[in-house]
Amino acid sequence: MTEQQFIPQPYTNSVENGSFTWSSPSNIALVKYWGKKKDQIPENPSISFTLDHCKTTTILSFSKKENQDSFSFEVFLDGEKKDDFKPKIETFFKRIEVYLPFLKTYHFKIETSNTFPHSSGIASSASGMSALALCLMSMEKELVLNSALSKVEGGKENFEDFFTQKASFLARLGSGSACRSLEGDLVVWGEHENVVGSSDLFGVKYPFEVHQNFKNYHDTILLVDKGEKQVSSTVGHNLMHGHAFAGERFKQARTNLSHLINVLKEGDLDAFIALVESEALTLHAMMMTSMPYFILMKPNTLEIINKIWAYRQESGSKVCFTLDAGANVHVLYPEKESGKVLEFIKNELVGYCQNGHYISDKIGFGAKLINN
Ligand code: DP6
Image 1 (cartoon, helix red, strand yellow):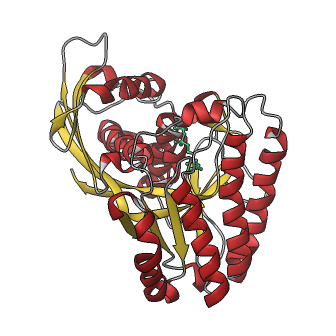
Image 2 (image 1 turned 60 degrees about the vertical axis):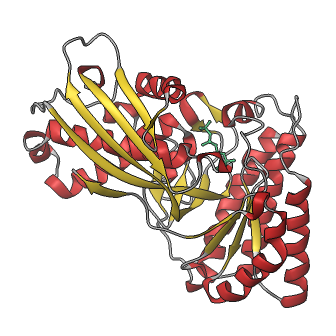
């Protein structure tokens, strides 16, 4: 697949107005994407668990307009107009216009809401950008309907695959990790020699066997710091350019993904823990060793990590943690331990969260069309 294949033939259908609603989840990376080239082409492949509960629902309403010189849209979060979201969406529209040439011919109303609080320190870009990309793809589907569908080999079924792939491709142009949010329960993004069909351009559903141990895995997100991100993802990714350890890190991520394929197949929870925690700490180590340097953990992040390690040692539990580029902690654990670990979280970890806030989530299966 190359970018060219996502440029559509001239549309044959005409649509005056309408609306689509999609909900799309967040995801948590096990092998991290950190470092990118232009337009979110990743420096290394990554893999994530798709989440279930943390998601964005977006209603995209559209109507044909006269003036076709510029983009025209308004954005609402929980019913409130959000002009400060506009520059990010304008940039997104500019990047994807060549792949969705109808964008300037409509006025859009984008109404979005998240299941998690906007100021929770949980990035809404993955769920938000993927939900918007899917709404736009539903629109394109209307515009190519019938005539083009019959030209796609295999007709409608193959078009469904293409639909998801192009939606992931578009979501990536909004925010890299967003391309891993469309499907579940595991998604790989970035070309890797051992993953057939993997691509730098879009995420693909993990194609290999996954042991029962990893089914229904839990992720309880401890909100240690709900403030604005100290370093934006884009600034963070850019710090990998010229970073002294970048080359080794990109190699390590590849190797880790190769190992993880075996770990997931064998159900090896100890190896999973070692790999996932090391990935999280390596991401933070990259930030600490860049110039300028950043410490994104807070004292309570470390308190939580130490408590998890102590609990694991004394109980033999297989609970572990991972981190995003921030202070919040994702506590990962197998379904069969869920009762005990949740008890441990409530008794020993929640005290380190800002206002005692945490979110109970688990592995999910991707985005859903709500209506059209
Ligand atoms: C630490 O996808 O938010 O969560 O492509 O600049 O939008 P942009 O970055 P983003 O980066 C996510 C980085 C991460 C690791 C990961 O999700 O793989």
